[in-house]
Length: 313
View 1: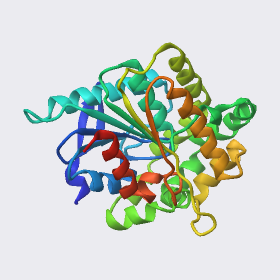
View 2 (view 1 turned 90 degrees about the vertical axis):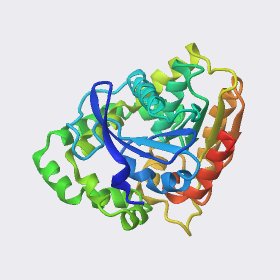
View 3 (view 1 turned 60 degrees about the vertical axis):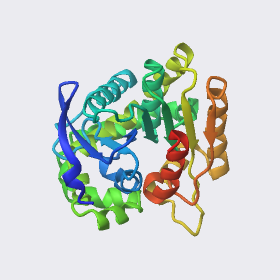
View 4 (view 1 turned 90 degrees about the horizontal axis):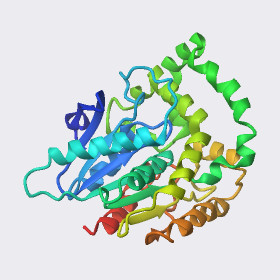
């Protein structure tokens, strides 16, 4: 597909929002995590668009021409954005089309999808977490380094030399972090240049600094807002086949940050939280391998298969 033909600017919560909208059928809305734009979903959107209407949006700061985002983020605000996109999508569905909605969240985007489902029970039919973040990533040991990370990362937003370097090297940095992006950049011309935007750097840094607080907000929601009975859910962590597949810098950094030096420990952490949530709703759980953290890039066909299982299509 020529991907730009399916991209438009839509006013969402009074903010111009870049949205990829492709295919027809039940709605699948994809939510990115930190340091990720809608272009990371192009391979999966291509896989699913034959029998689903796939919508991917850029959270504030991640579209190349977005205003620079330096404000703190909150899960309730991000969930409200998801609900507004659902309203827009349903209003533009053809008569008689399915109104079912499945949210697919990657990494921190899984936080957002879960919050959206908990805050509006009954509006969302299914939630899929692709190597979704867990509360274990914001544990006590990680919080000890928060002030140090803030002192290191916060000045990046304002540093003119860093900003100048990012305009030149931003795409390279995002390629090193996620090696699978090379396939997207090869198949969809123009996508690599998007990561050089200053707003992408700013949004990424801001969300890294806010991550621990977002985990606290999700923990609070889990205690106060139960999932709707009948909500369908899939939890799919990813595992690389080391050393035959290089996991990339992003996965190595996450492993270092968590203190999890083997993938089984990471999968166990995801499974532990899934078991807790399964006390509310049924959950389909399986590991997608071989894959790095950006599983929708590395294994789009396997992800599409699981989404179809969850949606019953």
